[in-house]
Image (cartoon, rainbow, N blue to C red):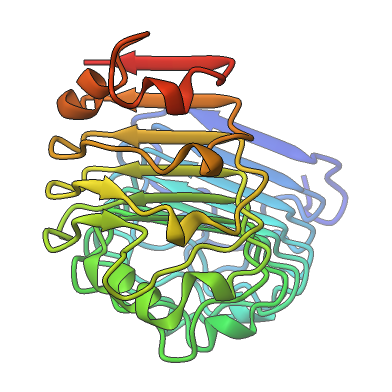
Length: 314
């Protein structure tokens, strides 16, 4: 059918091991709004020498290991709202024109080891609410002027390049959720820049691999303060963390969840006053802290006895 008369709005292609490309002439239905390609092991390009459907809103590409090329550009796909790419191991740059997508709300990139930055494609500064870069080992450059992304609420940088650096201009202060994993340079710079500048932050998840110098959280030696808006805090894999500093938590009055995972040297929690609002406490694989939190007899038990839900796992 002619792409101009076709009424197809959703196309879902899965487990087609002989598929190499979708279109080389731009003849996919122009009304297409949802495109999902999943587990097509030989697909190397989607729209070879062609544009994406102009009404496309959601693009999902999962487990296409040899995919290198999506389309010429995004310039005519102005309605695009969501881009999710997982397991595209050979993809390098994303198509040009990404920065022109004024309706784009989320970008989720998983396991794309050859993706190194958004330098060629750029990113839109308006309406983008979620940016997730997960297990993209060579991704090392954050978008320029990311602090100007005033709509960005959720930022997740999970297992990217160890050399990825904190942007000079800082993070957007409107963030409500932040995940940083295995990014010691970003963590150190963020501490110096000031976590407390993130005045809307509600959820914080820090994986501390590579932060071997950190012995307290928040860091007592430099007066690190966390924003009062926080309701959920998770810290993981701080190999030398010994204690949690109450002073850095003193302005947080609505903390609901505290999760502490894989911190073998941690011995103590913050003072009880910092934990009064807690509804959930999770302690996983922290043997010294686990001993201190033994029900009824541990030295830390009096701090946590009031918490409705406590889960401690060795």
